[in-house]
Length: 262
Image 1 (cartoon, rainbow, N blue to C red):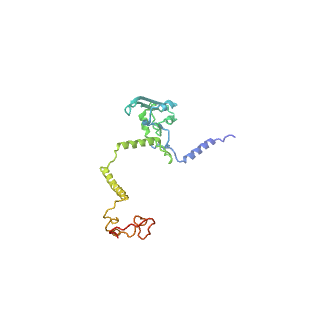
Image 2 (cartoon, rainbow, N blue to C red):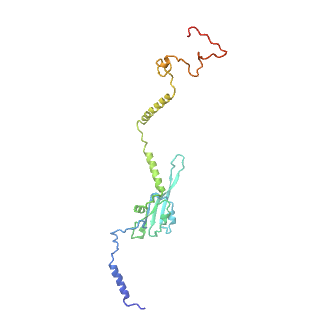
Image 3 (spheres, rainbow, N blue to C red):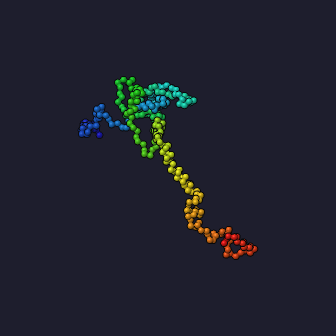
């Protein structure tokens, strides 16, 4: 079927009329900054303190746009007789953003979390050679990196944060001297004194005391009524004195009474 003459013009006018009735969505940049996503791939920020110059990011970069220079320094031994160590010191860290294709491989392979994505995107230059930014500029972009999302409530604490917290607590404990009270020893001895005296008195109470003449419970005390008169009969089971009313045993003769004995 042949197209109707003027149908294309009618469709175009319909689209124009439909669009004219809608609200505009144009963002007035640069007067109004755009609302970017938290993980927008703008530029790469460098956290220099974490960089160990392992060169892993430069080797894995598919565009070879990362330039790193370093030198070695000797660190003296921390203890006497120890061995000196050598460490790499970062001299230059630059990224050529005219070659970078924003793949993020350097950020993924960094084992020490020294590279991060920043949502900063206003780094246009009039000369292409000015798109190679050194570590000072990368360090400035590091402060625009958004905070990472919160961990799950049941997640473990990151090892880096735990190690940093333990180191800070250890340094604080070494710098703060132990608090000692002036009379702590005397107070401790005073607190232990009554306890020791009470233990001694308890031990003395458990031991049998010797009988004293002034004690009322002593059998030899003159104030005791039972000790003032002799017992008329011997105690049960006492065979030291013979009973006069008991019959004499065969083969035994009664002993004669001595003079003066009733």
